[in-house]
Amino acid sequence: MEISEKKISRILNPTAIDLGDYVINPFRGCAYGCLYCYVRSNRVVSRIGKPWGTYLEVRINAPELLEKELVKNKPRAVLLGSTTECFQPAEGKYRLTKKILEILNRFQVPYSILTRSPLITEYLELLKSGLCRKIYFTINSFGQEWKNLFEPLTPSFDLRKNAINLLLKEKIPVLPYFSPLLPGISHYKNIFAEIPLAERVEFESLNFNLPTINDIIKEITLIDEGLAKNYRRIQQEPDFYNYTWKTIKDNINKQAQACGKSFEIYIHKFGGYFENKYGA
Ligand code: SF4
Image 1 (cartoon, rainbow, N blue to C red):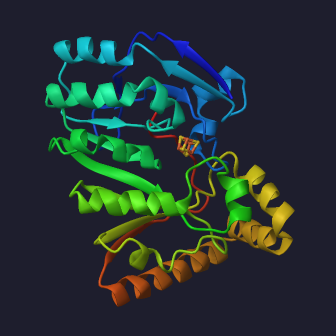
Image 2: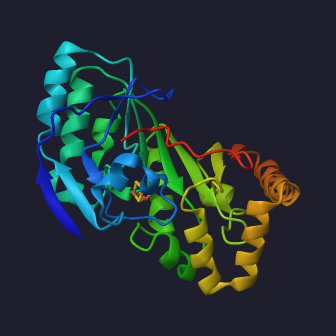
């Protein structure tokens, strides 16, 4: 992992998504390097020319810049972590996200956060400011062999579930976000019971429109050829695609009803095009 420090010229980047007018990413790159990460296909990232997950630029002047930018321009809301993990191991050393949260609290700017790292629980007091609108905490559940393939370096699912339970206990607005749902791989049925305080869980299907989908299927072949064939069918046959996701949705629905919980499942369109909506 190559870690470098960099001074940047802007930290608030405009975005069209509805979670904020701007995104904030204190790092470029990500130490976790998930196989299905949509940022892998980002134009800016491709131009860097290094494999995703092998480098991390630490934007060391991010807090200082943020303070200056907020004096000129107060956003309605911002989103943290659209193209990186703000609470990855380097945060433990640099504490950039911590400083950013302190500044957002001081300037009274509401924020949402995308994360999959339990390190966020170190900032409980900052998150209790009332400005944290929502933490979308990504979770999944599959055996170690699949984890080694898809996201070998991320914190374990148990640690993440514990972190979600702790945040919920502390009344921090956290939404367990089960993503990506991997047909035949993700064990999604017990998730409602495993996060007992969560009234709602949201799910997102694997995006078969990812530019890297063929690489993903190739990797699945190395572990389970039959399953990889199934993935090819899902990728190529609209009826099978719809059948697969409907079956999964029905199963989740049954489970949610049994536990008295609500859920939403976002299913990407068959044959749609991939767009990285969060920007660099
Ligand atoms: S943690 Fe998030 S940003 Fe990092 S590689 Fe995984 S999906 Fe991408």
